[in-house]
Length: 338
Image (cartoon, rainbow, N blue to C red; front, side):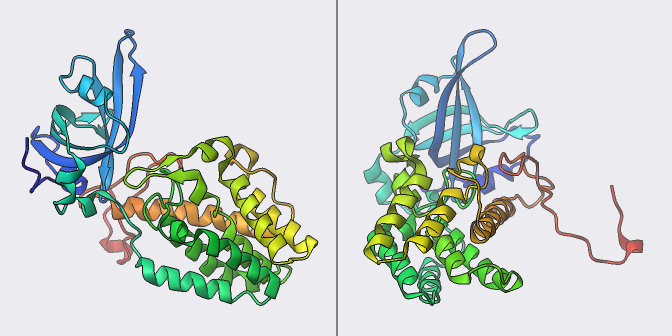
């Protein structure tokens, strides 16, 4: 299995005939790897593999020739697999036949690296230019300076970081994309609610997830860092904003309100918020954050859908499958429902 020139992508694999039992080869990233017990007390491995076009899970049982190979791997490894199309509980779950690890030198000389790493669908340079415009739109000098001070400290990481490990905008430049989407929503929605201070809401949006540049680490595969595990992005983002606000001489009331937006933007304590939103701007930002996170999940499922897919697999963040077909807009007499 040394040739890596013509592997199938995840999208192409999922389009294979599910009844024919086709075999395929692919070069994929090991995104998640966990060992679990079976009902009989033996072990099996749950292996999530993926590339920029999607992901799928395989169950690798102890009697599979590849069991010991995958057990010794680490998340973030790149593997070439040979597998057979199969389904488990009506979910795509190929049966692994053979696997080998691809070394970084071999990968670097191929065109596969770009196919492994999912990136934001929008142009990253344009998103960055837009983000800077949103910073400049803040009219309050010290509030704008506070945002700029944070971004000056983390700019390189912020431009490339994902917005999550798996739930939403979980790809390269995803944090930048998510933040710009929220800023666009803020500009449209803020005029509907004159009780909101638009400058404060925008500053909160631009800084709400900045702690994720510290929480996450890894180039090919993202994992939580030591500080990410021990403190989390909410606290880390609060620390960045507080340091910048003091440096920029932001008055104590505005700094406290800005910190509160960051501490409460997760919405609920069980979702990771350090506080429940208790100012108009904090409520506003938390709801926009939840909206864009949910729609980011929807957009990603639609991008990764196969041509003949009607529904996605159940998505944990949506707590549902997603209908993937477009609405039928022809007249009622022309519509035939199943």
